[in-house]
Image (tube, rainbow, N blue to C red):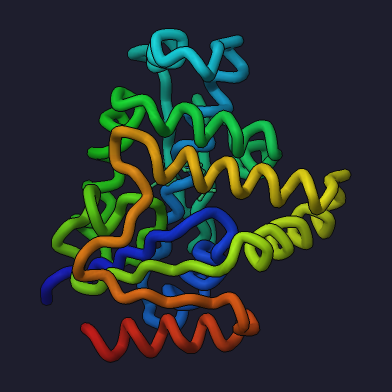
Length: 223
Ligand code: DC
């Protein structure tokens, strides 16, 4: 039986992870959140005191002994940085911003490329990110570009952070969202863009359940 890979790309806060996780469960595939890899490299750079705006400073944190690992515990992806579970620590606004910065550094993308490729090679999976359909898995069986308006995405991200007990303002989350969209889609390497053969799904007016049903239908119709 051949391996089925589904690539889901789109901007921050489009609901990619929640929708992909639910769709993967329904399909019996594993779900791989690649943003978490960039967040882990970003957290490592922050901890090592790097200037994340300076590519050389970021590259210096990718040392031979650096261990960025994705492990599945009870079917859920957890991120490990040098054997420490950092799955929650990579979710702060600072880690988001650091992730966006380090993801523009070609050496960081190169460092994470094989890890992503190898996971997809041996598993039926839904992999989400920014460049999965365009760069990481150009031959994915199904490619979806999942998006929603910046306001709808900021509201969702804000609600998530508040629920986690974080002290954030909606305006800051929206500003951060717009800035990250801009940075992610204007960087020279692997910019966020819809693959030519990706199916566009806009979830702005949808409930979460509607979006999940839509994505599952697109996958089932195309495998
Ligand atoms: O999806 P996320 O918000 O967790 O992603 C964090 C950052 O990582 C985001 O600013 C863009 C970057 N990223 C990327 O460049 N390529 C990916 N495949 C996934 C994420």
